[in-house]
Length: 184
Ligand code: GTP
Ligand code: MG
Image 1: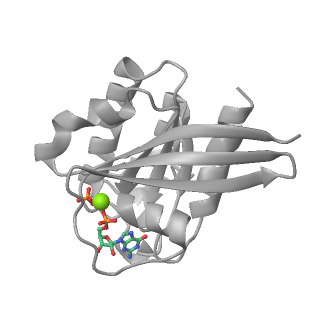
Image 2: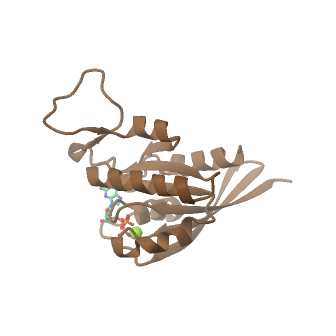
């Protein structure tokens, strides 16, 4: 008989980085250019077949990024098996916010929680301010560059640059979370 895993997943990150859009892409394979900001949190489920013998049901809490909802977050990450912390590659402040969520999860959530960092809106590469890797040749200092991948490696996070709009790396993100948890 096959194995069925059930995972509680929470999405965290600044408002407008695209948390709800990533969930909508993953669950319904859709995208909206005009999405309303989430109020409180939204609950969705998605079941995927990892391979012939393994099915994974995700119970997803899509939290609201607006500051006034911040105090609700512990309710959603408390029993979570996995968290997707999202930033927007065109907003450097959103990576700072993502880092503070990671710190909070590492201090307060389940010690075995699997955390993935998602740099969303990778389709907007012309407006990119958060780089992926440090370049071999140093960049000019006219801008304070931030590199996401070295940070993710150091903090022990899965890392993907995603686009909810074009669907780039969205399934890959969730599948790699599955694989990581089911091999724990
Ligand atoms: P809160 O619910 O307020 O926390 O925001 P959120 O993180 O859920 O953001 P949401 O998914 O509502 O997306 C905010 C805006 O960004 C919407 O206008 C989306 O259409 C847009 N957006 C989301 N993902 C992408 C993406 O990958 N690329 C582009 N170009 N736009 C995106
Ligand atoms: Mg939302």
